[in-house]
Amino acid sequence: MPRLDLTRDMNIEVIARLIEKGSDKPLHGQDYKVRLYDKDFFEDDFLGESGVDHDGRAKIIFNPSQMKRNPVIHENSLDFYFAVYRKELLVFRSQVMHDIKAMEEFRMGEGEQIDLGTFLVDTGK
Image (cartoon, rainbow, N blue to C red; front, side, top):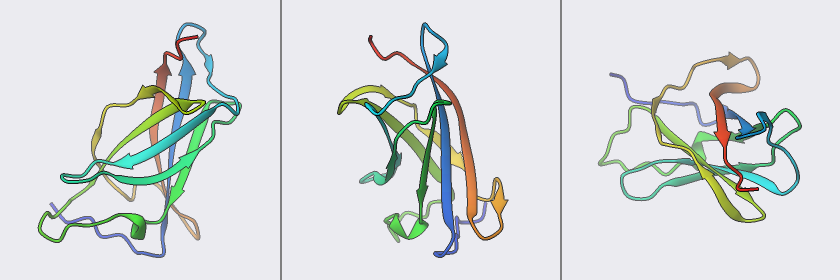
């Protein structure tokens, strides 16, 4: 399997859609923040933070140069997880999504777009 090799000038956009468990409505509002991480062997990389739009979508854009790479451990892919906070209180943490490949959807002049899917979030309301 080839090593992950991304152009440092190319951004990666990661999207996740959040649905409120019980109401089946999109999770949204200024109280919510989503933080994206790349799971690593020693220390996870924080890749960015986003609000949630009226459709329940969080969109985080980052540049691969933000990721710390350990030269001893050769990573072949990205291992994302994200956390949802309401007023800085953790309300949801996704499982680690292993082996996410870059180059899912290339958009000329913008970079990569990776859609993680839709998630039910129990907000505890």
